[in-house]
Length: 355
Image (cartoon, rainbow, N blue to C red; front, side, top):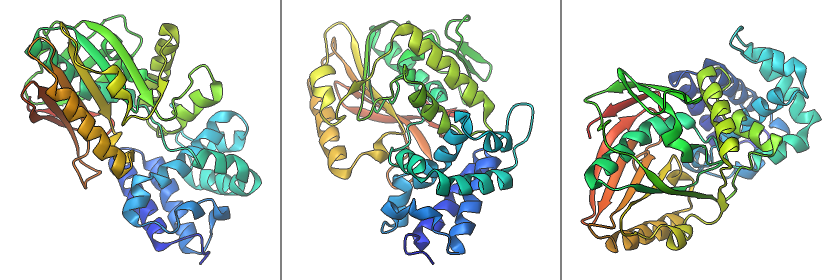
């Protein structure tokens, strides 16, 4: 076996194949399986995965190595540079051919190694828009509880598409919320009682940071964002494209900053508004030291909150040590009460609300 391939890497691709299958992407499941089988035969994939060969299975999962390679293949298919690969990918009017796609992509790894290395060197940034369908009831809960307008600050915001959460139209089972003429239409299966849909929502301020923000004015960076969306999930792709257009029209910008430091200069509680620090599928990508620093900073900000200047920490994340189960949690100050509001699908396909 090639020294750049470890049993943990093969296992990571097999596990990701199972995730893709269960989460509704049989095409990516087949590609991940093909990659695992190739590595099992000793194929080192041009050494593209060598940077992660010495890591544990858990570390490989946290680095999202499988998603990096799947994204690199999708990016090439979207680029127009490889029409044969694009033809093997699924489209709304045709099924894809994952076996042909893998064969073509594998050849491209050798012919375009530098292109693949550059893509793999960037951590996944999906900026999944449908996660706003999970975050929305949290914002509504804060608005109802405080009766105040909101100030929203997003961590790990990627391109900042979810900064416009209040501009989307939501169908949450039989419930609806948001402007009826919105170009961004999000649907999620809803389980449980309705959230406080009649809570008055006004957003006074919104800002976001990311270590490596996506510049939506750059066509290559826009394509990278789409490449991390699974290619046979056409509704997700359509929602992302619509959200990109909306963000461009509104001039959305994300600040390049360290998330463990940025809130100290931006998200202090302010009288007359509810300040909300929020994030989704972000925490797992932080180094352990950064997590500790950020958690301490959030606690410090919360302790400065008052009844007329409340502070909330809203997050859609897996519980510690789990990647397959997602929770929406809210910690609210003054008081620091923490509670789970919902369980949810990682991409926002369903929400099980407890409130």
